[in-house]
Image (cartoon, rainbow, N blue to C red; front, side):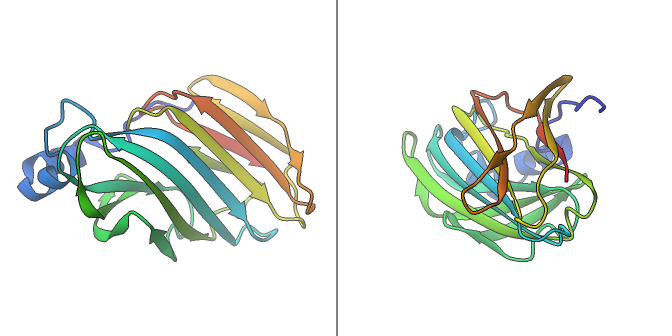
Length: 209
C-alpha cells in the first residue's frame, strides 16, 4: 500500500480565485486569509453501502462549527472520489449557491441562512447519494479537513449481503488495522475516531470485501 501524500483540500488556483473575487472573499473569508473562518468542534460522518455490488451508497455527516471571523455567509463542502459523486444532496446549513471543479475535486459553495458572527456556533447535517462508487473488491474512503478540528469520527457500514474482510486506516506512511464490528441487525461496520487531526492530511480507509 503506497504512502498517502498530504495535500491541501483547496488547490492554490481555487484559493486564488476566492482571494481575487470580492464576492467570494466577502462570503467565505470576510476578514482575510490569515485566520480560518471557523473551527470544527465535532465531525461525525457515516458512509453506508446499500448493496453488495457497491452500486449505491449514502454519506451523511453532522458538523458543529464555531466561527472565528465576523460576517461569514457561506462555507465550502468538498467532494471527491470514484463514481457519480452527487445524485441527491441536502445540507441543513443552506442551499448550493455555486460550484467549482478543482483537480478531481468539486467544491460546493453553501450559502448560509444568515450571516454569522465571531463566536457563534452552528450545527448542520449534510447528506448525499453516491452511485457506482464502490464497484471493486478493494475500495477506499477518505476524509480531509481544511480547518482546525477538535474531534473527527467516521464510520463505514456494509450491507448484510457482503461484509468487510479487512480495513486499514492510512495517513501518510502510518497504517492501522481497523476492527470489523458486527451490528445487531447483521451488518458490519468499521470506524475510527481522531482527536485534533491535522488539516490538509488525508485519513483514508481502504477495505476488501
